[in-house]
Image 1 (cartoon, one colour):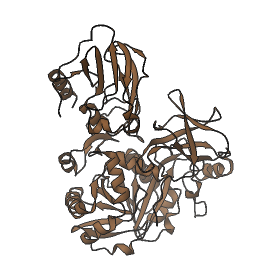
Image 2 (tube, chains in turn green, orange; image 1 turned 60 degrees about the vertical axis):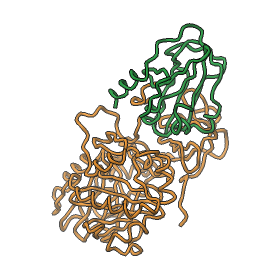
Image 3 (spheres, helix red, strand yellow; image 1 turned 180 degrees about the horizontal axis):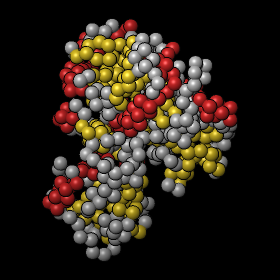
Image 4 (cartoon, chains in turn purple, orange; image 1 turned 180 degrees about the vertical axis):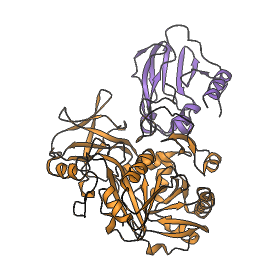
Length: 125
Length: 387
């Protein structure tokens, strides 16, 4: 399964891309594959203050409900409104279908590299 | 997000969520499932395909073409002997001696208090021979109960669950896929009928039954390992007809759309068939006593039947088992099964409410983790195939 090398990752199966102080957050292909068809996404509202490790949304598949954690401290500046009508795009394009964007309030938390994340998922497989 | 391996709702419903005590048993088709890329899960002690690729696509394939299911986890218990019919009339709530050879019946087994131990399909294979099909999670309990209840009757009870594989082919194109592979005249096999035939040259009990709301067949194959030939022949025959392998996830959403009860959710040992609104399966007009008769006669008089209602959400947030149903803000029931419906494109659920509740007035909501989601009450089933 592809794990893009330019992204950072969390142990909670999120990918993070940081550009100009804004972190874009999505869930990994491994997570999407494990959950099955994604049918609903509850993202945090724009303007919400989030902190790293804090629950800030939900992703539901046919058979499961999973919490979404913020990987960073900051304020939610944008959510992917397309996911409301097309949550299945997380399955078809997990690294394109981002969930939300956070303007960082401090230094970004330590993220896993693609290599480290791959090792983690191999342990869970 | 949380590790997707540990969901906040059970990944598969209908089975106690206990830690497996040993490695789950593979079916004879395990290698085929693995090669097809199936996600395999422990379901009632069996290693079963949850889905192969997209469970939504599998569900739609069954509605529009056909799906191929491995159901080898189901339990098969054979009763043979001159008293087989009488023994089943005593052991179960149904009137099995009335079933003609070649026909099948949906029935239940209860305890002495009338609580449902399992729902069953019983095939009468011959005058003195029946096959009882039980849910995987209850197969041992049902086999033990039948053995115990058959004492004093001239009948032999054998748990043959390990000897059988069970394959189902379900969907509007099931007939056209199966017909070239069997000696059976499929038009002559009516719904809830089954006979010994061959499929792909393999002897099998071929029955027109299922759990999807579609036309289709269940194929009981013995010995179990010959299921490989049957599966491969069906897969090849259906390849250009839209047939796909389908897992337990699709099976659950298919039966939910069809309004079919699942043991462990709509049916439990805390409920009599009357509590569950399924009192019609209890046949008092049969000779002799049967296990649960006294309690069930009482229940027939006094039970306040619950009513199973259908709910369709107005939004997209899935409804799940255990969530409260409210009318004008007051709790009136609880969801037993809920899932996104691929056919309706909306979340659906079945819920028990008091049988007397007027569901034609008031605003209905479901409490989804603290937030009220608007729902509409509908008649079951959610989906009915065109005859």
